[in-house]
Length: 429
Image (cartoon, rainbow, N blue to C red; front, side):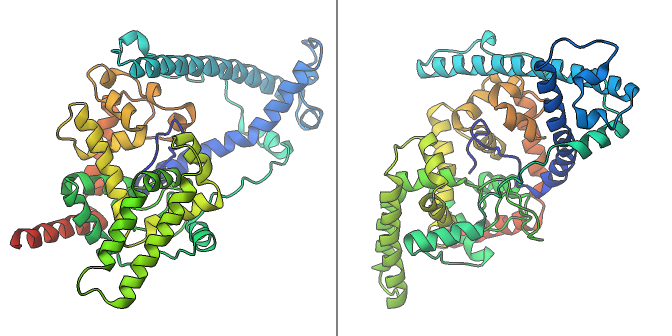
């Protein structure tokens, strides 16, 4: 389950339902990104020189660009550059104020003090209202931009599996989707989660089509795409989440594996497999405990070979359902302690998306009215179309609406049917 986008995520989305929106956003973002280096170069050139003659616009334009633009185009470019620079400065000031308010609320939360409207920013980020760069000039700017180093690819499922094997000698036990979903449903019901809660989270996190080995950014059916985060599985746990779950529950998982191995009627080969897995799990636990039990330390450890290997536990038919269900249950338990006795699927997902404590803050009478900028980092806010330009209440409704669509898709329908089958079997015992 994703950690709050304040520290990621939010990541953006792994949901097939969001891929089209994300792709459209990416197209615009990439176009702007291709211009930025030349803009930066112009800004640096301007800062390094004395105030230029207003009649000579080329004094502010990098030489490589000036050679390709007419004087009139250079003036247009500089007008755009000036407007964008002013806008960007206003945006930076705005987000500094947002973060200052968030810091104040964090301090108040630690002291269990109530929030007031003064603890929030009441407006959305400033919109750019200046001139746009004409296509012919933008094309030239893109052509002369400095070559940018290719961004390093994020770790993939193949990487998690390779590190798991190399670091711990661990190869996850694979399963069919029906088998994995059945184990997941059994664990969820045992932990007090309802069919509606679990299936709706699945529907939103995976677009209603997800597989248990689905990674954020990779379409679960076509297998096309590239990772946009480390999020895995039905609940889309990040690698740092996996480290945290092992620290919390690793020893209990190991004891449970041994108990399963010693159960009456278990075949010797299966018993040996379970006991070996318990030994490996304890080795992972020792590795995870070499860093302080704090989210920031888990994030850094999760990017090490050992941390990446631990993340492969999500793909194991025995352990994966346990880990993800317990993460969901932790959200429900926190909400219960705060007086929320019957969370909807959308409310659980809100806690998942923004972080447990922040999600609960967004559900308060005051928090519901506030713009979502108060609850996400600048990057998380700008990258996620479902979050932008909404109040917390509007975001919750948007999550519910998307769930209503995705819960009708094949993977969600199958999951719901399996929950019903498990409940019927339990009722007969």
